[in-house]
Structures are given as structure tokens and as C-alpha cells.
Image (tube, rainbow, N blue to C red):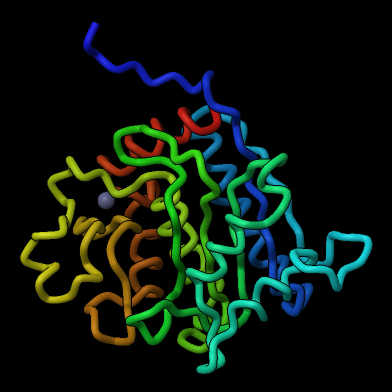
Length: 255
Ligand SMILES: [Zn+2]
């Protein structure tokens, strides 16, 4: 009595639909798929769950020129006058796509253009969490948007390593990280947040992928350096607190 029990059995388990920009080369698509699979297989092992996922990298309707029928539809609908893709707009389209109703799913959308949101020049990625740190599931459509274009611009041929880091970061947010109870947690009234509001709701542990990364050179961590350091020094990718919360939340969502 009184204690809240979290049961996953009341929730329909959602698969992840992974959509790749159809303009990406076969080679780039394979790099992305390999990195996401490396991460998702590792999530499955650490939580002891099966994560259903499907990849889409071209038109999926009989008439591909209808709305919501191919990746480029979403991208061009969200292209702003600055020629960048508004990542919030992509998340909005994901929420309104017709088959969310009868086939609820979580989205991961990978774009070859530069993405941004109001108040920034660019983003590496953006996410809307599927689960909150307290274990409550967000029932509406949620997802992650990732930009390969910005990674290529920053890191050239080294972009795949940075992609692995930012995918772990954004999927971490998707799965309810960071842990607000962690001693490393940067809250909305933390001193670092006064330097830049972008620091809020991130982790401060040196080798945790939930650290806030480079935003236009105004922050002090570089995504590629951070990813390389983490791969070298922390096989768990996340700090202990975020790692434990990740495992629990994956069990709630997919167990
Ligand atoms: Zn952390």
C-alpha cells in the first residue's frame, strides 16, 4: 500500500522505427545501421530485453509522392528559410503521421542535412523522451532526430565515431536519462546552467555520454574527443547512476 509499483504489462510495447534519409549513400546508411545496431544489441543485453526495430530508407507507400510516404517528405516539410531542417518540426510530423494511431511506435530519424531548433545555430540531435526518470511512460508518439550532415561538417571522415556518441546521448534522453538523483546531475538551477541553459538536464561525470557536448564551440567539450575518451575509459558509456536508470527504463519499456 502506498508504494507505487511499475508494471510494464499494462503498456503496449512499442517497436522503434528507424528512418534513414533516402539521399544518404549505401555506405553511409550501413555505417549508421551498424552503429545503431551495436548500441541496441548492447541495450538488449544489459537489460535482458528484446527491442523490436525496423529500418526504412526509402519510400514505403504504393504512391511515394503522397504525404508521409518517404523520408524526404518529412525533411522538405521541415526545411526552413535558412535551408536547415527544424528538428522540432520532424518530431511534430512523427506525432501526426497517420499510422501512429494503429501502429504506435518510437521513431529514430537520421537526416543528412544540418538540423536546428529555435535559439540554436545547429543541433547534433534532438529527442523527446519515451519514459521519464520516475519510470512513467509517455504514451504519445516520441522519438529522436539525428543529423549526420553536421557531424560530417565538424569531423569529416571521423563522423561515424561521433555518431556513435551522439546516438548514445540522444537515445539516453529518449530512455529517460540523465538520472536527476545522481550526484553528477546538472539541474535547471545548477551554476553551470547559468553559464548556458543548454547544460541543464545533463550529466557532469567525465566519461558519461549524457554530458552536454559542443554547441557551436561555445561549450567546453568536443563530441568526438568525448566519444573517444568514453570508448577508451568507460565500457558502460554512462555513469553508474545513468547506467542503472537506463537498465530499469529499458526493462519497463521493452521487458
Ligand atoms: Zn551520467
